[in-house]
Image 1 (cartoon, helix red, strand yellow):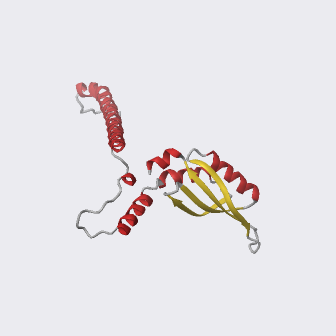
Image 2 (image 1 turned 135 degrees about the vertical axis):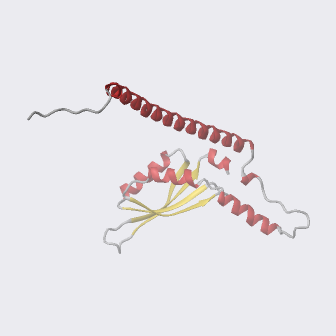
Image 3 (image 1 turned 30 degrees about the vertical axis):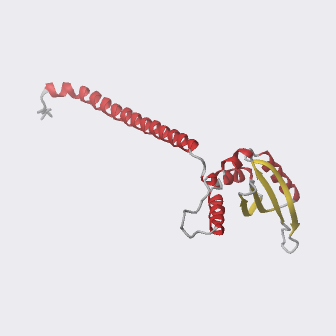
Length: 184
């Protein structure tokens, strides 16, 4: 007995199979291109929106320059106004930029213990620990080279003799760049 091939498919349909493969391939490619174009459009719209916000922000004075003043008959005292202005000044500290500059300059052998900004003076007082004097000195040099700061000074340092590793705890003072002080 011989095996026979039974094919119920219409030969015209079989001839269209390569055409359907190409059509599907073009549809998938078109969908990918459409998705890419939409993504680029969204990026352009975000960039435009960010540029418009920056332009609007450049036209309006910073909040630190818009001091709180008492309204007539509001019962707000000058001390309360001063406290509000100080709080506004502290809230306007460019934390993101400051922390980025500190993070970029901080090597693994340095541990930041505290950061205290003083917006009125345009300074940042930091406290950190280093493994040795050379690491501390290199860190202060790296901070001095950071464009975020005009000057960095080592205020004090001490060796923790009670710790087995004898880390050096030090305090530094960094003056913000003039461009940053103008933004506050």
